Length: 180
Image 1: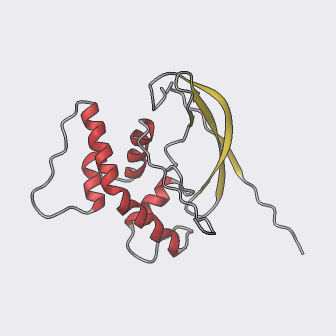
Image 2: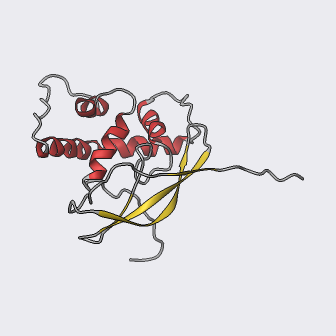
Image 3: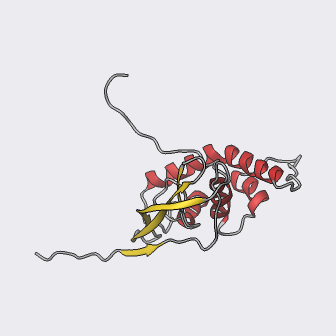
């Protein structure tokens, strides 16, 4: 019997720019790091060491996530994006059908909220709002595409601004047993 030895790739994530606290806008200080796994399209696990940051004013703790991650998702953003968009059963991502179903359900449930966040960000930045079409309704992806374009990488372009101004919803769920 031989033992398989897996080699995990470990990457240290460090942002080159100074990012203010998404809650109050004050300075963030590094207080440590933690490991975060991400899975690639092939299913290979990579370990990212991300920094834990604390605001010097409001004292809230934040994690520095790279663009390749979606909060609370284990696969990199381009995999989640492909899984959401691909309607065929022949998706070339190493995930099972139930995961693809959860990603699609998550996106279609979150889409109105994400569009609202993008509208809010546009207003805060004093940009012209996107004109809503008066003809046939758009698909969820086309609706989002009006704000960040439909080109590859659209999910990462949504995540960054929404997470950076502290509007990302906590979407993890836990199932508890027993009576309430």
